[in-house]
Length: 249
Length: 149
Image 1 (tube, one colour):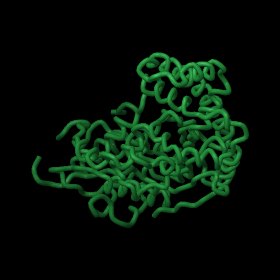
Image 2 (cartoon, helix red, strand yellow):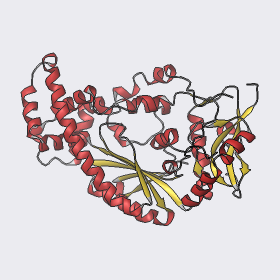
Image 3 (cartoon, rainbow over the protein chains, first blue to last red):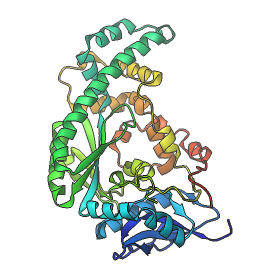
């Protein structure tokens, strides 16, 4: 590839929207590549050596955040770079135009709210001991024994704990989802990123229901304050609720 | 752009998208992709998707759980309130072992300045500072996505 500029793609908005103000990746100004009533938010990027780091990621998130503040945006995954405007037009807007227009319409007025709940570790371990008497017994039998001699016993104990933790997790995740799902249009749960995660979920919520959703999250947070900690992020562009199915062409 | 606001009297930590760490998984794994795009290298970022996914049904996890449950002092378990529990966590510092790779990886990318993650503060001790620098340097890889045109 010769020294030239490629196009970094942030997301898709309607062709009649203005690109959000402020710099994008590498300070380049975001602009729109338009086709089929759609506008792809792009900015120029050096095609020879595309290395994206934390700054690029921050810029990506900021551009999308501003686009969301102005209207509806279908976010691209971080790191999508296309050869030139024609490629953006042909391979994104043209090849997937029908789906993109449908999703822009579907997602109008909706945002993603992300909730992560994680347990306090000691509290979780106490619950595990309380729920399974065998855990308490094994714990006692391991007390004071040398580590090398108890390797398999400890694995066995850990397995018991893991099983109880999984039950606790499922119960809590189910209860939280049950109380929030009625306020959302849709939700998606993700894999827990570590052992103490109770729930990692994204909700698609109508903008005018956000206050109601906030209140419900607060109620959950208050009720569970001694057991878990909630991280609540948003409003975000609907990352978890967009997708391009197999090419239409 | 960091708009942190406390809601619910501090029970829930609320933030806008500015807390980049909280939305890393969305930025890296969710959103639209097309089948034709150029090769890019993600510098010090993709390790998060690789390393951060710990396998919960693993011997490592079992041993960590066993350790955590053995560490408990049940004699004082009675009506222990949250403040005391928190105190214990900071005191024994041992919960850092169960933090897993996620926080380490996060440090590699974000250094110490980014987040307001209370979870991390509890046990930010040794696992946090050690080796995070070399980690970010040594983990630069280029990921090949799609074809190069």
